[in-house]
Length: 224
Image (cartoon, rainbow, N blue to C red; front, side, top):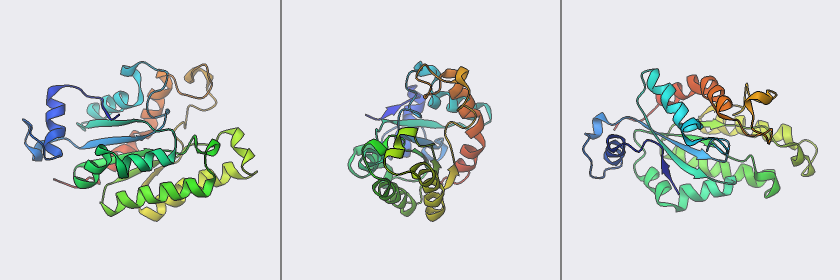
């Protein structure tokens, strides 16, 4: 289910105006919308809602003078689920129909190796990014590091996995943030007990490090 992180009536009216629905805010004045399409990393697994990635990013952008609405798609387990959201769900179809004033953070594939081979993962992401490129939706491709157990696929899975994000971002003309957990991996005080997902302090580090790339992404937004 799609979640709108900012639940104020003003923000919801702005989002409705952007999508061509009834609202109280003129469309030209609506702030850009950031859609976060990803797995448990970007969806704040294990942290209080107020401390998760999306609201932390929104606060940082507001402080930097960038009013935004953030729409969270919700947890998508693998790249195939992300592709299905874009091509089959109401939210994804609405995004394609009204791409202006919207940008997307794509953080997918972390969980794929238990379900899909790398060629299948690449094909899913290639199709998803291709659709967004065709609609001229600015995208920030957010990579991740492969889990150690993914080596059961083949010995060089981790290396090829990391390269996949940069190769696809280049192919589709997207911005790239190579590793969601940059600055967090290797710092247990920034991780939850599973030693994988960022805690609240870790999400704050992720946002601080990613913020310049998100600002660059917003600079590419199609005007209404």
